[in-house]
Length: 148
Image (cartoon, rainbow, N blue to C red; front, side, top):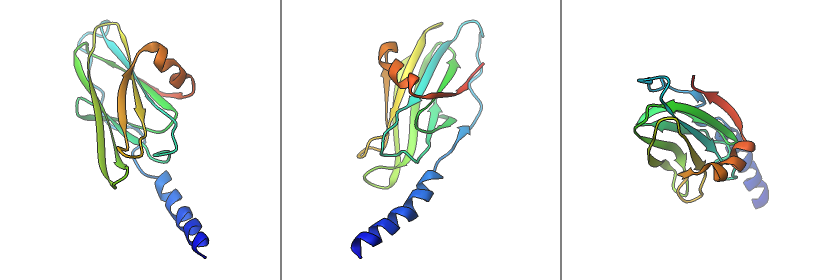
């Protein structure tokens, strides 16, 4: 009986989990001061069991940009400058809003990579990768948005 109760609770939880979080483009992207001189950041979401059904809200410099699901990535062109890339979700070991962010000093015509990872205790971790580290994650993911 106890096992059946857990199974029923699981089936009730999964559909709600799969619909949580924003999806797709959420706001306007920062305007480029000079379209021929930009930095580009690829933000990829790793496929992990924890947080699999949730979309993570990606922010650049505090502004909502995209709702990212597992095995998805986006490419955003930004002005060469210092930028904060963050991911926000609701969950983790305690059901509260969690935020993780990194600050990157971006240079013109350079490519940057950020990995968003689901973590059971903190819910979300954002880290900076080099191209070799990012490549396996990008190959297993779908490009869902690229700024022009």
